[in-house]
Length: 420
Image 1 (cartoon, rainbow, N blue to C red):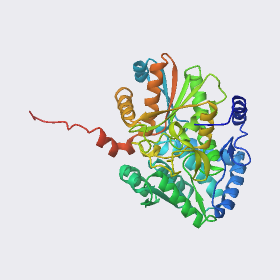
Image 2: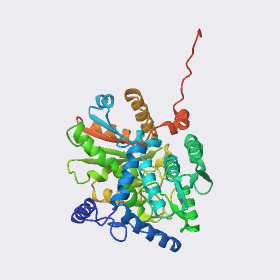
Image 3: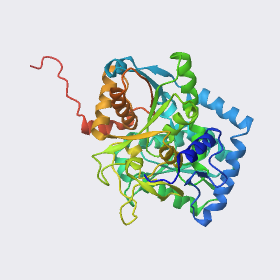
Image 4: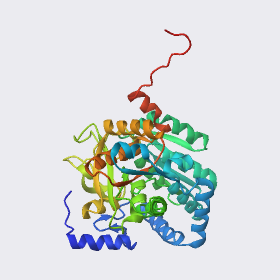
């Protein structure tokens, strides 16, 4: 990825990011970010930004959010020593267990915070998009808790491969709309949610699920998800006695990764590894490896790194994991890649499935397919850097992925009784 940011500029931008001086007043992380939105949405985004900075710095609002995170979500989530994986990898491995948060993934941290913000802003309804369904479930649960009706847009392809989460959204009271246009996955769902918001920017609140989109969403989501890294940092010091040598997370839009990474960016001893979906291979359309293979451009209201073809058309993507199947990435990740503070690699479908099975076999934990990419990247890094301390963001549990897993890893029938 080409960049005109030199070493000194990169160091200055990192320092500003650590001091929470980025994004700037224009919503930019260096060259990335910004607010590229239809004119009809500009007043709504301006109002949202004003309220984000107001409430996220309001002691009463944040105290109420913290009480809900503890009493309803179940925070702090545990830090687990993964001794079985550590023995196999020749490393000291710890897992930040977002799979044990209410609704089964990190998505609830963001959904709850934004639902409370929507209520403060007087929203009459919440709209959201979802890929793997975890953000949809979290939004449905948070809106039920807060008392606001919600509609979730989900690509028709994702509805088929994430059926358990669709049923959970219905049970939690959400209206689920199948998106049949475009690639019928997460990108199309975001497009449709934006169209709905344009139709009613005054009465609707768009609860965006990842650290993408126009300002202030990347900043808002990072703030709400940074509870992951803040907890993990303290837990590592209390349990391991030291910070990790490496922190690893999967990256689609990038919310769980930025939540884990951001609070430790100032810790020079910690390396960071973001793992994207390598899919079937390196060919355009065979993966969702945005930072590995993409170029800067504008998508969904933000200037960031994207996957597009020679004609400038956004590329259809592929991943076995619905939550990573997105052709863009958050602008903070684009900056961190450009200045070299975070390394980004890919893990293929095959390696993610292998890592998922390994974690099941030696740790008794069924991770989400998204998280399995982080395990695959961590395993490869451990082989090249033996004896290190590794922290993995286990972003979600794998119950939702059983339809997909059953296709790729068939369960053998077990004979009972007197069968010969």
